[in-house]
Image (tube, rainbow over all chains, first blue to last red; front, side, top):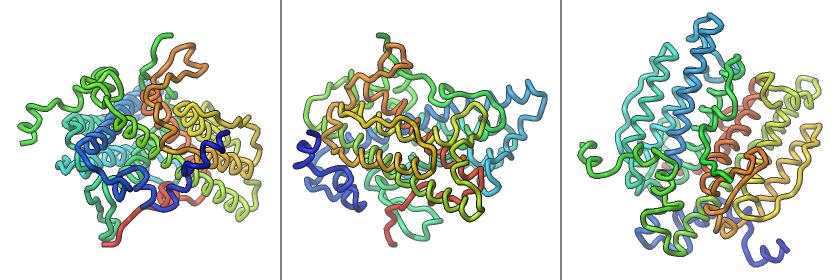
Length: 214
Length: 214
């Protein structure tokens, strides 16, 4: 029954055998029916705007985890700034750098996909309070965006020094790099605190849900 | 300069003061200009399809991390299935349940947003190999989807037992719940392996990038 529906459709897996096929299917470029209109542009820019809205919400949660780490240290009478050097493996980033990288991933993705300059943050934070200031600076930066800023996001050419001259389209960069990296560093920040006794739970991770009464 | 551009636009933060405003701005529902056309439906279903493509890619990476865990255990002459019970904090899920929950988050989100039945997986895995089978079953399930399956995703009514009768719209559920939860459990799976000596790096997390030659 599902099989008969799929017989004339192209199943998911076949579409993404190559990045080109994937991009074609999702209509980012090289589409069989090329983008024709401002409707396409509106569609794409809203998608980016929506996801940066989610990044902003996650950074707001991260700010609360930092506050919880401070409170935990105070309750246990130790220096909360010890958290900044903790890590889950000797060859992974320490907590401070996980937070800094989560911030930079959101900030630089918004900048690269909009063409707007990003504020510089030189990674000099030495305390939980300074990390909170950093997080709030990125939230404030994201506050300055509107959906229109992401109008050309999908087709921008993105690069960074470690790619040694290679580039990605904005669309590929966002889904393959910025989105998973942002959640990687936010989740590692959370996991390091949990591993070291800070009392957080899934609700602190997700934040408020738009639940509707029955 | 940026300020003058923004003077007549509505900055990012103001849009999402309430979930209703946020949804209105991104056009999911209650939009000032209500959705008028099949173009809107195509837009939305592609967004979901694209993100499930990313979930599928991440599950493919997770399968490789499980393989690396097996190889690591073999090289160190210990029973690799020990990994299934490891956890980062005593009140967090153990590794097996992190993997199972990552699988279920992807599977159930695809099912709930499409209305298609999901296969049942009763959480009986006892070995790394059985976890790999579980992961591959979900990849195969996602293979059966096309963009068209997500046509009504945004406006579906989603619920689950722990919400005690409350509901979310498909759009809210996806961005507020499924997306962050999926990355939460995938990243915790990765972090538990890294914490316990398995040699993984960011490339193993991200998978292949669509980089273009200069």
